[in-house]
Amino acid sequence: MSSEPETSPLENISESGTSGEGLTLGKIASGLVQRLGSFGLAVIVLLCLMVLTFFGTFAQAHMSLHQVREIYFDSFPGFMLDLGLFSIPFPSALVLLSLLFINLLVGGMLRMRRTWSRGGIFVIHIGIAVLLLSGLVEYASSDKGHMTLYEGQSSSRFASYYDWEVTVTERLPEGRERLYVIPNDHFAWLEAGDVARFRAEGMPFTVELRGFLANCRPRRVGGPRDGIEGFGLEPLQLEMEAEKDIAGLTVTLVDPNGMRREALLWGAQNAPYRTRIGGRDVAVDFRHLTWGLPFKVTLRDFQRKLHPRTGMASSFSSDITRMQAGVAQDIHISMNAPMRHGGFIFYQSGWGPQNAPPGARLFSTFSVVHNPTDQGPLVACIIIGIGLLWQFLRKLTRHIRAEAGRRA
Image (tube, rainbow, N blue to C red):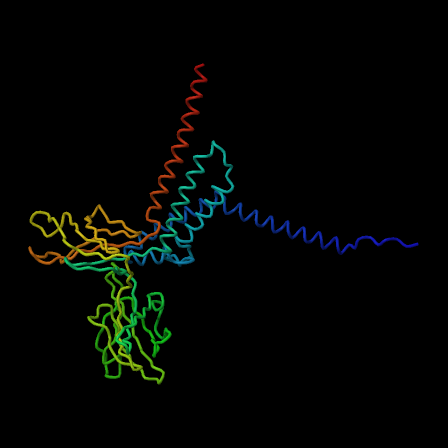
């Protein structure tokens, strides 16, 4: 007498294992979400930010503000924090603020019970999230630099304070010119012995860069075979004001036949290096990284007011003309009144020459910022203010109702 076989225990084990695996993954995901949104993580991140601010502030005694920002705030994922006797790995502000944003998003918005009694708190969390997100966008996509103009001069470009670029201008047979740009990120990492090679379509030679120095000066070297034409670049200590650093490196142009043209490039050189290679006239320049503007700025007039019997300015401002798409507009820029247009902001930040005699031709310096989220902090503060007002009014209403109930 036969009977139908029972279900194989292996099938049960397999199904049980699959279910258990799903349950385990679910528990892991749930636990991860719970920890990312926990109040404890928020406290730890805020304490780390406090420690970072403390050490970053004291580091400015022997480092420039730009260096401190690159190490303590912009590095990823972090740096070695020097505690005197030993060093420990420590996350940067970029990592900590990203964690704080995730914690705020998960714990303060997704997991929070959204009721009218908690509405103000929820709105406050939205405002803080907008503030953090604006900072992230500003870090990732903003350009910051300066533009210096003498009275009567015009420009449609502004330059970085710290970053550099190598430009190769090739004169074509038809009389036209072709410009190649190698930005800072492609060579700033070069150390002794490192070589970075670049070749563009249609370029009859290869560009080699080596020996980048963040601050240096040219000097004569020992023998005729040392350096390049008897000169080399001498490394200098970084300045406390990083915008005063003058970088340099070595460039080599190599054509397909192996012919080499080598030169030193220095940020304060008076003229580009010019040579002929691959049948083309070439000019190689080393300058601060520049960005283009969708409009042209002309400095019409610069005004300054000096403190009595001193050469120190109590106030200074500029009258400029902004030209875009054939439309000219006259604008006044002062220390407390920047120009905002098309996502660009022009701040009045400097002037010169210092101690210039009366009637001397003066220049005006503008700090230029291109930030897509320029109004982000203002929007965030408005949202936070609405949330605080909502919460305070709700508390006040409850208090008034309670007082009225007791009197009744």
